[in-house]
Length: 167
Image (cartoon, rainbow, N blue to C red):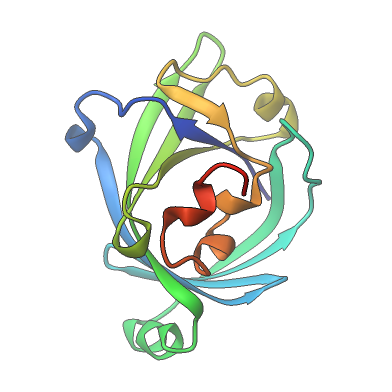
């Protein structure tokens, strides 16, 4: 089970290059259920996601998620069949600790057609943790329920026009 919140970023965290990072290339073969293929550094992964949670303001995204390894050959074959654009991004893994819990922030910095887009995701053990999460001061607005920040939607975009006002 995957439980997460997404946030915009007010300012980039200090010393970003000191954190562990993954260079990611991913494509989507289907949207419902989600069938995704991903290259993450030297790992190749096939993911199946089935949405479980509702799209309510401040509610976490809840998905059933199954991952399986792929070969590089299978990835290269399947990426040609991806719907829309292939997403390319650098994901920084940033530890974050509150008085109550330790978290892992995944800060995504997009490249190519989505250059300039940056947001963070935080995964949780359960929905109570997600609802009680105290975000760091460098986080901006929560965009968990905003479909424009879903990777499947982003594969359809030629640029960042979808984020302009009145969209």
